[in-house]
Structure formats: structure tokens, C-alpha cells
Image (tube, rainbow, N blue to C red; front, top):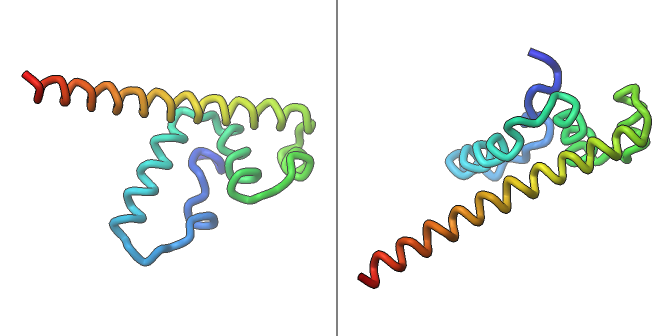
Length: 103
């Protein structure tokens, strides 16, 4: 297993004290990040969770800042699409349930 096959839960996840709540949050984050490439996960860990600048992340990753910018955009696009798709599905299910009740 590579270094960036998962987001770095141990380093970046603050405990709220509620194990059940934490497990749900971790599961939601895992679903959102599912399917990202190892390089994309590295961007998530360094920039989004580690709060490094794109320049600092590029140096650590051994790539250009422009490459990190492209990866950052790709991560944001994929995450936005997943969130929108999930929300749309929830709304459709909710609407179907309302129309079933009206019958």
C-alpha cells in the first residue's frame, strides 16, 4: 500500500469524543475521497488537511506548482461532482417519498 492511498486520518482528524459521530464522519470522508488517485490524495493531505501552500506541496511532491494547481482543481471538481450527485439523489428520493404519501 502506497503512502497516499488514503487520507491521513491519524494526523488530521481531531477527536470530538463521540466515537459514533467520528466513525460516521470518517465513513463520509472515505466515500467522498474514494476513487481519487494517490497523487490527488497526496494533494488532499498536503494542501487541504496539512494547510501547505501549493508551492510548498509542489516541492514536497517533486513536481511543478502548475501540476499541483491542476491536481487541486481536479480534486475540487471531483468532490463537487460527488457532493452534487449525492444531494440530487437525496432530493429525488425525498420527492418520490412525498409523492407516494400523497397517493
